[in-house]
Amino acid sequence: MKVLVTDPVADAGIETLRDAGHEVVTGYELEGADLLDAVADANALIVRSGTEVTAEVFEAAPELVIVGRAGIGVDNIDIEAATDHGVVVANAPEGNVRAAAEHTVAMTFAAARSIPQAHGRLKDGEWAKGDYLGREVNNKTLGVVGLGRVGQEVAKRLDSLGMDLVVYDPYINEERAAQFGAELVDELTDCLARSDFVTIHTPLLPETEGMIGAEELEAMGDAYLINCARGGIVDEPALAEAIENGPVPGAALDVFAEEPLPEDSPLLDVDDVIVTPHLGASTEAAQENVAVDTAKQVLAAFAGEPVVNALNAPSVDESAFPRIEPYLDVADTAGRIAAQLLGERISGVEVHYEGDIADEKVDLVTASALKGVFSPLEYEVNAVNAPQLAEDRGIEVTESKTRQAEDFQSLVTVTVKDGDAELSVCGTLFAGDDPRIVRIDGYRVDARPYGHMLVARNRDEPGVIGLIGTVLGEAGVNIAGMFNARETIGGEALTVYNLDERLPDDAVERLLDDDRIISVDRIVLDDADNGR
Ligand SMILES: NC(=O)C1=CN([C@@H]2O[C@H](COP(=O)(O)OP(=O)(O)OC[C@H]3O[C@@H](n4cnc5c(N)ncnc54)[C@H](O)[C@@H]3O)[C@@H](O)[C@H]2O)C=CC1
Ligand SMILES: O=C(O)C(=O)COP(=O)(O)O
Image (cartoon, rainbow, N blue to C red; front, side, top):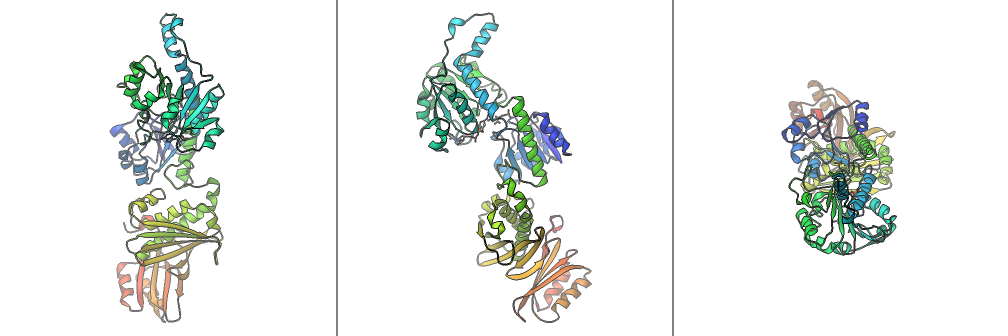
């Protein structure tokens, strides 16, 4: 597989991929048409914050399986477009948290004591001792906006340095805040007004973009602003104005609305603004952590295993994966057969789990069933984009479970529906790993799901199976296996054949010409050879 890396990541990550036998190509700072060219045959793309992974990139990358973000923020990746193209997006949410928190603490002190400004003047030969009267953090209040992973680590560190903590985060509860010795407040402006230092730790989302504007800066009053999260969260011109003309005394910023070089930012000219070029995650330990974590996720995606930090794929418990993995194919196959047999527009899909499998978290199995249902219709469908596809098309998806399974240890039933028409296919595993289709549209069968199948419905009369055998034989199509099921003697019967190849059209017509044959469906279970 080919892995394209477009932002600098630690060697340890690249070695992890090469050791697993993959080709790793680095193209740091690739953009525009060069990026589109480079990604054309890539199976994985690894980025940090420097690469904009747009819908165009996904369009240009038909082989792409995963985008790995060697870090936390994914605001530079169009996740919706990734999902549409069936590409997993995964980040590395743990490895640089401490680095980001430490940098935030460093920036807090740098702002409180004007360290960069004093440093600069001394280097220029000036002993400006009288110009700097700093602010201690001890006994002051820290306002934390966003108490997630990074916010929590910052809170712990500054709490231990004698600060009181006030938190604004609408997605956590008071108990959670209290675990960090913090008071949770309901209003952002309340949090800001009570603080001597405000530190931002939310992701950049539509909801947080411009969240700190003129009104909020006014509410902050005499508090320093520290932003090591994302540039777009703070209104930069408003911040410049609030520092130059009051009330805000200063700010320390690691991130900017425009990166890499925020040339147009008014903040670069303001003396009380301290800046670093997005260094929050730039420690050796953090870079090694996130590079290796990302490489491992790429390897998992290549192996079809759960990608633990996938942001747009059905979630799977890693330890339970071995138990559900064999059912992914069962569900996919049952979905394929059901969709091809119904042969109509599909307006609903129900996936029912019985027996042991009902104890598991089955999101991924249901996604595989949907993949199977859509496979005959859609070219590039997989478990990542299948649920989205169902939603986009208004197809109602339901999942149900019962602990008891009549005759099997576990059973997965996929039912496809359109209005009053519906058709169910049940699949199971024999001996834990041998997939079988055991019921089609209510008929008990025992069919091995692979390659080409033929499902014939016929009147249960003598000679019909002989007729089918003769027609197949004359068409030169070998029968690898066969299972016949009937409702009542002389009623309707259903026969499933495993064939070595696709039955030609004229043979299907010959069968249908006989009035004992009710229907003949050719089912393809092999993507590579389904007539497209
Ligand atoms: N400067 C740097 O190098 C680094 C920057 N970051 C940035 O820090 C951000 C946060 O990272 P984590 O703490 O790991 O993320 P996280 O997802 O663990 O925490 C984010 C927190 O923000 C809260 N939040 C969401 N919307 C909010 C809103 N409207 N108002 C207040 N709170 C809100 C969430 O409830 C959550 O608790 C990342 O998204 C990334 O942009 C992360 C690492 C390094
Ligand atoms: O992890 C994050 O969100 C960061 O902001 C770090 O960005 P970087 O990987 O240094 O470009």
